[in-house]
Each structure stands twice: as structure tokens, then as C-alpha cells.
Amino acid sequence: MYKFFLLLNNYRAKGKYELNEKTFNILVQIFNMTQDFLLEKKDASLENLIIILSQTFFIKKNMNKYYIVNDIKNHQIFKSEEFWKNQLKIKIEEQLTKINNNTKRMNLNLSEKESQKQKDETIFSQFVPISAIMKEFGLNSDIILNIANQIFESYNTGDETKALILSLLKN
Image (tube, rainbow, N blue to C red; front, side, top):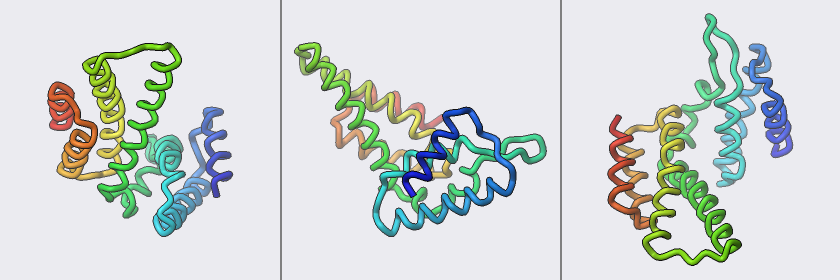
């Protein structure tokens, strides 16, 4: 299963996004069956790739692009607050790890204030695109706000960053 999605990602990397209807429908079925399997196994290892691929591949319907995401976004996993919170935490942690590794490699000693600023900027830079994806997948605004508040609490996010994210979510 993993190899299939990696091959599909290689196809995406070559810039081949438009599919014929038969291939599109088969991929929708595969994506949904994979989601069922991953949900049952409590395995989130492919979720980010599935999200990216579902927003990439499309067919033309009445001269408009119709993406796979439109046919898979109602899957129960994408309605889960826990799923999206975990996706966001994974992205934040990946970025914070990169920043910490770069800071160590460059022998920088950041003050607590500078460190907090980096963390807040990381949270902002990850939250904004992922919240847009959450909206595209049809997640309720109240749930997105709840996730934001949980993230703020988990990472002791600064007031300025909180206010900025909350203002963006209200638009």
C-alpha cells in the first residue's frame, strides 16, 4: 500500500495531475479503502500524503477541475478533531526539530524570548495552511477554533500569535 502511494506521488512530481474518469474513480475507491484500513489500524503514516494527493489529482467536469478531495472529504477520519490536531502537531514538531537542529549546528544560544518567538512563528506558519486544508475538507469552524486553543495551550503560544491566528480563522 505504501509503495502505491509513493509511486502515485512520483507521478504527481512529474506534473501529471489530470486523470481520465475511470482512473479517477478507481483512485477515489482506493483512497477511501486505504482510509478505512488506516483508521482501523490507527495508522496515520500515509495521511499527509493522501491529503496532498487528493488535492492534486482531478478530472474535468463541465470545464472545471474536480479533485479527489471532493469525493473523500466526507470520510469519518477527516471529521475527527483528534486527527487534525495530530496532523498539526506532527507538522509543528517537524519544523521545531529542524529549527533546533539548525540552532545547535550553528552554535546559537537563543534567549528565552527569541526561542519563544521562533516557536510562535513556527506555530503560525504551520497552522495557517493546515487550517485552510481543514476548511477544504469541511471541518466545522468551531472544531478548528477548538484545535487552535488546544495547540495554544500545548505550546504556550504567545498572545500576539494567538490573536493573529484567531483573526485569520474568523475570516
